[in-house]
Image (cartoon, rainbow, N blue to C red; front, side):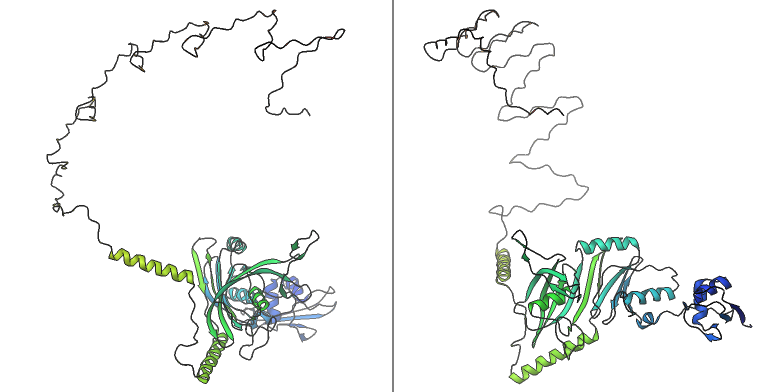
Length: 507
């Protein structure tokens, strides 16, 4: 089919070329960019390859294209340089990939370096996903390799952020240190701070504050790293690192601060002829799935450059042993067993041996006769409770009273039940019955209780007009004090208020 050609002159100053094609030819922006990338557009008889080239008034624009052909947009160079990536595990919410060393996780603010996020987005676009959303959850250093996870849905992003904030996930790294650690395991705990000018991390040191106590500088964040030695090589130590917190450059900074930088770390350590980047690899990442709540654990094999570096160090160890004349397993590292762990292991072994040697428990001096097995259809024999068989308990009819149980050789006599109308007999406390207390009518005064063998005489009540007798404090009455003349009577002293709940104040 013949090609279609369109030609016109620009009418507005400073319009982008792609926008001009979109307005004049009534096509999508993507199709307009595809025409430009396909070399179908010329401005003043010159082929243009920039989408945003600004036009001047009177510029001649000519478009020549084949209507049966689809013109795709060529991705930027930084996305093409990222290259293919390896997918380790994927579902509708999460994507685990292997990040190679030397590749950024996300695009940098300044510069056009390739990144893993751009490569993943471009790969999905080519597979037919028009609107693919990739959410960044965490990052790895540019020269650190290993497993990395991305979220594909907002639900997964929200759940993963909670896991990382609460440290509810497993992160295992393999690192090669320069130097020989004296211990086999340990924990590095401290605070890290970022320097504004160099953007390098360092271990923060507590300083004296205005109040006199020591305080961490503002911006310092807690960092906790657990490690254990896996292999010892000449002048180097291979460790397995488990992160409790995920700060930037955490492993590199904490080990370098202690005096054991990572092999090949050019920022916090020194260059190495064995490896041209830091010997750090993220080999395991595991957590509970934020949507399905299933346990997901993904591992990544060690890359070839770190394998080659370890092989070189092991060859150096063999040469050193051969030069010094060491044979057998001498000077080969073996994880040491602590004294407490050894004591527990020996104690468990002894307890197990004693349990095996202990004779079986016997319940009688002589073995009783074996109980014959009965078929499912046979009637179960009556239980023998002594030399004679226990009599069969007769079944009682409905409504019949349950017989009383016997507590001795003779049956206990049943207590006779009295009719509802009869008065209940009083309980006796001694040889003689207590006399029944007479009931008092309504309004009748309650009789005084007796506190001894004889009734206490009732205190005579004085009329309201009579003067109250004075209280006696001893054998003789206290004489009344003389009253002052010409002065009014002293008011009666009010009793002290009892302690109680405080009264609320009036507003």
